[in-house]
Length: 126
Image (spheres, rainbow, N blue to C red):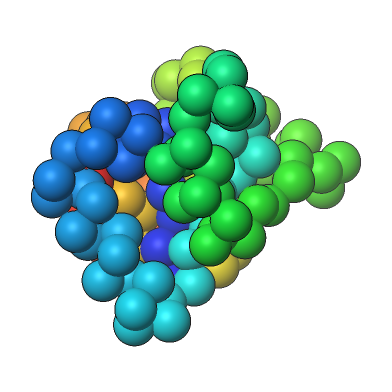
């Protein structure tokens, strides 16, 4: 399986929320592909020397850069959905490109963006 993590998921892991940690560890043990858009990581990494759990979790993830080819895709998605959060837009685009479930604390917004893309992907709690 493939999963795209949003910032709420990484914050839950960093805060040692039991269920988020358990699910993350199960995904790692199952050799699932864990994807983190680079802007998502940038939102949550504030003090790497004090965020050992988060930094360890990120080592098991593929960090996907926001590239030139994403600019129009994300911008047009935001226009069509009537939303404005570039990071959420990129989470949805990255998930659609990877055919991955999204693990998010913001299911309503991500669901709207995925629906706008026409992507039928699972949206899961952290």
